[in-house]
Length: 110
Image (cartoon, rainbow, N blue to C red; front, side):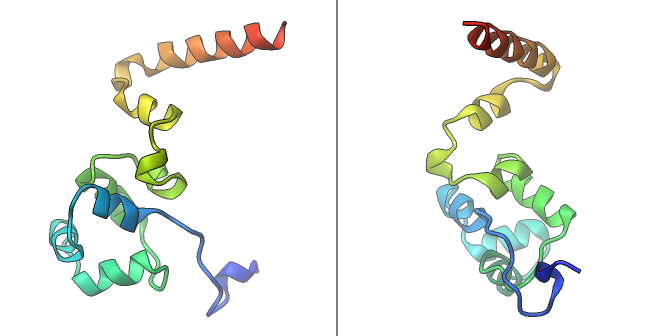
């Protein structure tokens, strides 16, 4: 069994606290939106308590971002491909991906 499943092993880094502060939510306010306590939010942010998929998706909805963004980057670093992708309507994402793939192909052919 991988070490991360052993009691006391560190959990992987996430950026929930940074996104919460960026969106100007207190731990209590975020907890109220999610139906969990301020203490649970604090433990999740400090990687003491695991989050569930439902919690991760709920946090993303409340903080107006995507679950993957909470796991991958700080808000100040989000003006990247992820943030652009989030602003593309779901109906246009297939087309956007095709454009990116075409750009990558043309660069690799140079």
